[in-house]
Amino acid sequence: MQTFASRTMGTVHKDHHSLAAMLGALKMVIARGPQEGTEEFFRILRAMLFYVREFSEQVHYPRESDLYFPLVMEALPNASVSVQRNEQSHVNAVYELGMLQRQLSAWQQYGASQRQAFETAAVDLCDRYMAHIELEEADLAALLTELVDDDAQGPERDPSLVHAGLLPTGSQAETAASFAIDPEQEFDRLYIDITHRLTRFVTPPSGSKPLPHLGG
Ligand SMILES: [Fe+2]
Ligand SMILES: [Fe+2]
Image 1 (cartoon, rainbow, N blue to C red):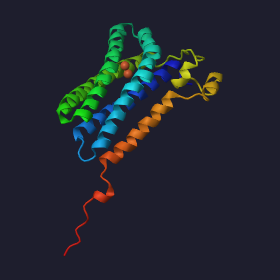
Image 2 (image 1 turned 30 degrees about the vertical axis):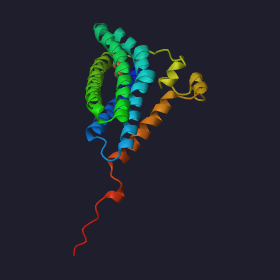
Image 3 (image 1 turned 90 degrees about the vertical axis):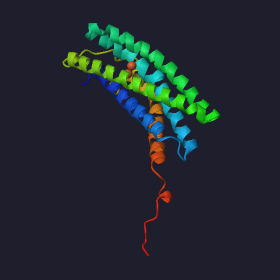
Image 4 (image 1 turned 90 degrees about the horizontal axis):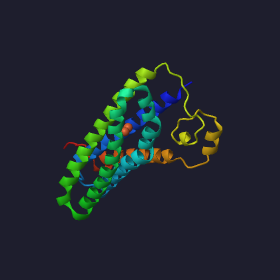
């Protein structure tokens, strides 16, 4: 049976995977530029920034602050500085992502003069967010080594953990919560929707492919 600690670490790692993929895709879309699909370009960027900001603020950061960082602090006493640094980084990231959303609107509304400011800030933020994830993954690896044989159980009956996907299946709390709207499912749907739109955006429609040369 999975322990509370291993489930928490697994979920944090999965969050990082989703966020890193979205940040990488964001940089790719920015590098590609609006080209001919300007409306869709802005629509995708807005959706990506919304996902990164809201998933971080509503799901990932609370999960780290409430569940994961206490594990780190307990198992790795020297990690307090890095935990404080990470907490501050969360506050900064939410603020900066909000600024970035406004800069994107300025570009769309006021034109190309606003483009460079957005692109520079967006790439810089993506790089710093990735660096933040890499630092946390290093802590995660150290914690995993420390707790590899630990089977201590966490607060299994806390209903809030159902939303974090951390309760064992079949619990009463999970059954009750299964009738409620799960915000994480909403973010999963948004993630899949962005993936599909991104695929369409980077794949030229079949009608625009050059016709094969028929000779003659
Ligand atoms: Fe974090
Ligand atoms: Fe994180």
